[in-house]
Image (cartoon, rainbow, N blue to C red):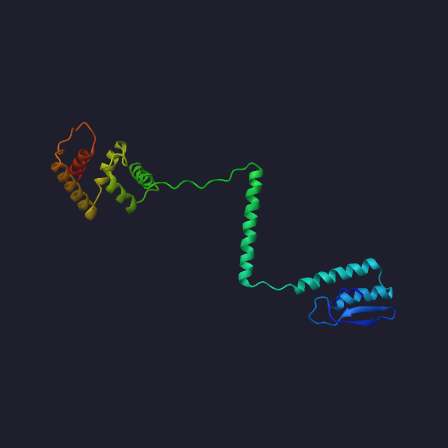
Length: 209
């Protein structure tokens, strides 16, 4: 006879019939909660529908109790998988709805940040504050018209007037060294009407000397 209760079985005489139940303790089906509905059904104390309802709940609890618990690491792995799956479904839902996910703003270049810093100083913006990194960039590239356009150079000259201490001394020393290099190359007297590297160096020296 087929039995829902695997393992060694024994007969239970209910007075109304015989019931096969397991005697293996480790079996998840070995439970009074499973046997009682069948006994009540055999004795006629409950109808078949009620017995099956009781039995179904007991089976479900037995299966759940028999499931092994996950280790903390296994639990974390499972949570990551579920989170990833939820994000994937959300992206798919947005695509189907015609919603384009917002792209993060592009990272601004050092030149843009430095020129914004300079403009903020010129406009005396209330949020402006000294930033050594931005100042260093300006001092390093102020002779390059591609990186510091002509429309910003006059503002930069005014900014340089406020240099103090070592920053001022190093800026003058670098300008003098660059001027000597240009003199050696024979371009020490450029056309003053044409903006250029030599003209900028002269203006910086004139401002800081």
